[in-house]
Length: 117
Figure (cartoon, rainbow, N blue to C red):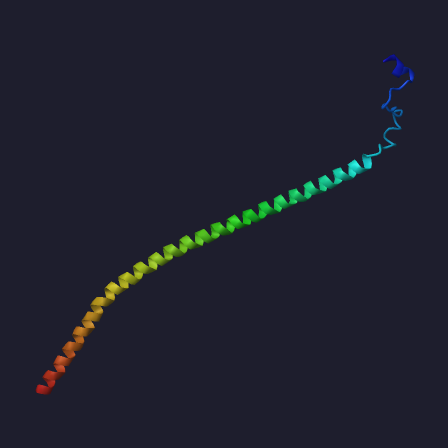
C-alpha cells in the first residue's frame, strides 16, 4: 500500500519500532507470557521427574517380584525334595518298626520259655 508506506496508518495498526529498539522494548503481555511459559516448563520438568521416579519404582518393584517368584519356585522345589526324602525314610522306618514289634514278641516268648525251663 502506498499510503501506509508514506506514513499514514489504518485504524488498529501499530507502528513497528526501528530495528534494534524492538528487542529492548518488550510488548505489554511479554512478561506475563514469559512467566506462563516458565511455569509450564517447570511443570513439565516436574512431571518428567515424576515419570522417571515412577519408572525407577516400577523397575525396582518388578525386580522384587522376580526375586520373590524365584524364591517361591526354589522353595517349592526344595519342599518337593524334602517330601520325597520323608516318604523314603517312612518306607525304611515301617519295616524297622514291624521288626521291632516282632523282636519284642520274640523276646517275650523267649522269657516265657526261660521261665518254663
